[in-house]
Length: 186
Image 1 (cartoon, rainbow, N blue to C red):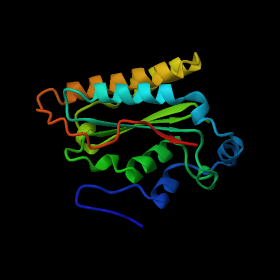
Image 2: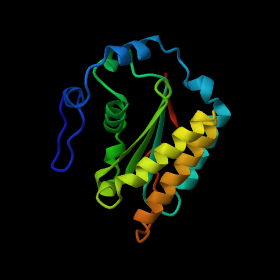
Image 3: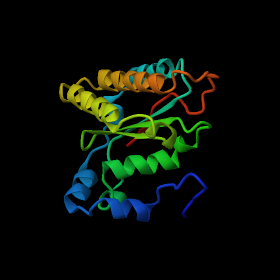
Image 4: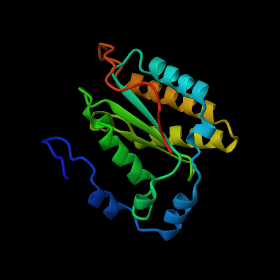
């Protein structure tokens, strides 16, 4: 199913398949990966991330959605890389559907130890890609030191700072369009 409007083309399976190259190695890695999201992030960690999202969304109209996934589902991993999966979740979860196009998806894939940030079109026009790449790099470095909770909380706060800079003149109505709790996918 392809969903399009005047301003939005939602990522579909054929579109993401065209972007990344099929990989048996990637499929096998994700197929063999044991469920791990709740092992790395317990209830207290999830609560801390939700609290960080709540704080990071103060003072601007940007919306942050956190998704932590153990591995890409095996039936998708052959054709889809981590970036493609993040874009798919961005579309499926409706992060792109915020009122002022101010949604940001912070996606962590534990199997590949990769972080992706997908930003909505309203933010993409005014922020350089380097800002988002730096946040991802910072988080990956902290995760290499096995500071998973700190990496996620710090990443959320850095996204909040970037959104505050982008929306510094906007008057926030503090309407929470996306849930603050991280979405945990095995």
